[in-house]
Image (cartoon, rainbow, N blue to C red; front, side, top):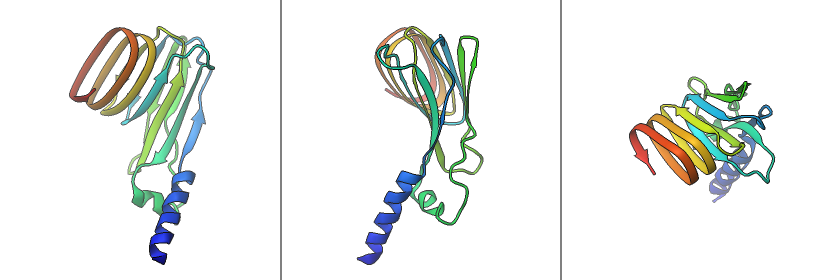
Length: 160
């Protein structure tokens, strides 16, 4: 019984302490988003009543790795990048070699922008009004509530 309590305590504290985030650049003028690189999750909205923002975070994705941080100083380093080039937001997802970290990109963007994904696996949750949405992936979980001018999906496996 004491062992079960200890395991529950360790798992709950590592869930709280294992996320690392990076606030992104000013995205108020962004009209296009390009997401490339490793597998990850994306949560996008176009809510004009909230501030426009973009951020990256990482969290441990397996229970063994959540506990291993107790004896390791490698707590899910964030190697992913957010960069604005003109009116394009470029997101490069990098989970790190040998890491059991899960990258999460979240943004609230102006309405009408186009979004392009090119990742081996993508979990996507989009709400709002967009231009063209392009999804290229081996496996994707795609949730969408809103409107888009066009949608293109090239995937080996797609869950909608």
